[in-house]
Length: 90
Ligand code: HEC
Image 1 (spheres, rainbow, N blue to C red):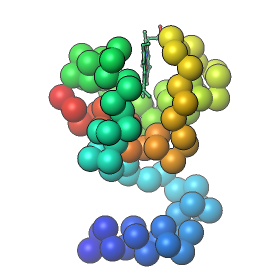
Image 2: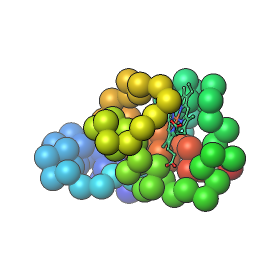
Image 3: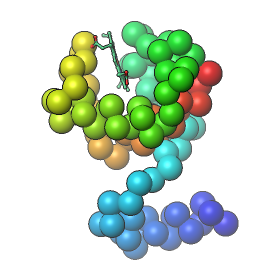
């Protein structure tokens, strides 16, 4: 039910334009986070970090206001999914 509602909102573009904070999809994030695992062990690096905190850090990294060892080439649309995965992979 919730999924269908989200799908409907996506289809209508409501969420995209409202800029609402989306709960990421950890399952989808697993594949997207693959390149990160080379350096990050989620259970260690993000053990005490919530998805929202990881998301906030990633936005800063992409904006260039937070230092990161490697330039990240992830898209804004993938941030929430990757954050959800990294926060859940413990
Ligand atoms: C080449 C190794 C490397 C790769 C690849 C890498 N990281 Fe990192 N990351 C680091 C290091 C090292 C730090 C610690 C800060 C620093 O020194 O840059 C860090 C820090 C972070 C932080 C900040 C942690 C905090 O305190 O909030 C986040 C979030 C993060 N990485 C996410 C990612 C994501 C998502 C990916 C994949 C898209 C990724 N990293 C890929 C090495 C890497």
